[in-house]
Structures are given as C-alpha cells and as structure tokens.
Image (cartoon, rainbow, N blue to C red; front, side, top):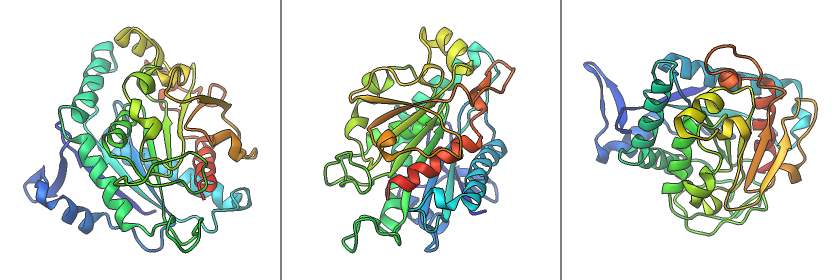
Length: 324
C-alpha cells in the first residue's frame, strides 16, 4: 500500500527526520523536500491527502489512514462496476500528522481545539498544507488539461479529514487564493487558483455547526472543483457532549452542517450496495447523516472515531467517481 507521511510541529511547520531527531524544514527547501519525498507517481490515478483528529498518535494516524484506504481498495476490487468512471482506480495517499495527544477530558478537548486553531492561524499549518497541496497539484497529471474534459489519464486530488483534522484542511483551502473551473461537478469555480481539489470529505468534523458561515466563509468560492461533504452522527459524544461544554453548542460531527454561505444538501449515508446519484452529491455543501452507521464507541468520545467503515469508503469512491 502506497502511503507517505508529512509531520507538523506544534507551530504548524513541516518537520523532517534527521540523525539527531526531527527538525523544521527551512522555508526555502519546502518544494525541494516535497520533490524528494512526495512526488506523485505516474501510475496513480488519484492523490488522497488525509489529516487525522483528536488524540491520535503518529502510528495510529498512519493506521487509520491505511485502514480507510484498505476498505476503499477492497470495495473497489469487489464492486468496480459500481464506479464506472474509475477505470482504473489506483490511489496514492499522503497522511498529514500533527501533535493531537491529550487527556480524554473537557480540558484536553479545549487544549487540542486551541492548538489546532493556533497552528493554522498564528502558526504555519494552513500555509504549509496549502503549499503541499499546491505542489501536489502542480506535479500531478492535470485531469483538466485541454486534451479531453474528463481525462482518465489525469490525477485527481481528494482531501479527507477527521475531527480536528478537518479544520486544518478548511484553513488551508480558505487560505489559498481563487482557482480553476470544474470538471465532473457543476459547481462553478473562478480561474487563477494556486491549486484545486476535486473533493473534500470531512468525517465527524469538530467545529460548530455554523463554522462555514462564520469561520470558513471563503469555502463557498474556494479552490474546490467538487463538494464539501461532512458526516455526522448523534452517537458522536466528542462533537456532542464535549463540544457543547467547550463551545456552548454541538459540532458538525454530531448534528451536521447548520448554516453555510450556500445551500446545504442533506443525504443519508448509504450502504456500499446502494449508489449515490451524482445529483445528490453535486452541491457545494453536503451534510451526510451517518447516525445509522457510526454507532460504535462506549468511551468519552462515543462514536467519534467509528468512521473507518465500508460506508465511508463507498462515499469516498463515489466522490472520486462523480468528479470525473
């Protein structure tokens, strides 16, 4: 399985391993570092960037990303005809890791919430991730090239976040400038952006329900060719119980997207044998009710980390299929 990692320090800056331990990559070496470590291979059809969430160690983050990708690969191997535009589907995964450890408590939740926000605002995470996405976009085969509209030889870029990791992706995409036109999706996008993503899947996002209307306001016109899709489950205690006490309101991961700068489409999470029509997902914001799927978890976080399911893989593959 082709999985590569990117590690961020507490200030959001990119780290590299050396003989004496991790150290920040100098700003003038960022692109060289990406070229050495993260050049998208020619065989890949889709580039996936995954950012983990709260209380996830380095090994656990890598394991979760591999698990989700493995579920998607297994599902595609069994039901390739359900995704007719993925012919073939050969994913290449980049995992972004950041320090998210804390106690499973209200204080721990607030601590990591504040760290995630600070890493992207006062720190460098948004710019570093945006720079990484820009590099990946510049060095992938362009599916929007002039040869054909839906170039199957192109490489598509998909963003996947979990919990607080969704904030990092939203901050990075919002930080970036405006970008190019859509392919398979009908969502309009202006020209001139430094990178563009073909889909953004936010699994159990740890932000208030009005975050897209109050904080990530630029996502309505962000460098996205496809939709912003967020899952939620009332069994998620981290974004329900803990989020309510930390921020005086429940989070998207518990109750779905509330207000947003564009209409929000609502859909039930579907089983792998039931296809998502393109019209259901072809909106700027899509709120997916996973309350019948994400149910496992008896600890303080409830079902917050029950996103590694075949249904999630089905949603990811459906987005990749429909963006062609």
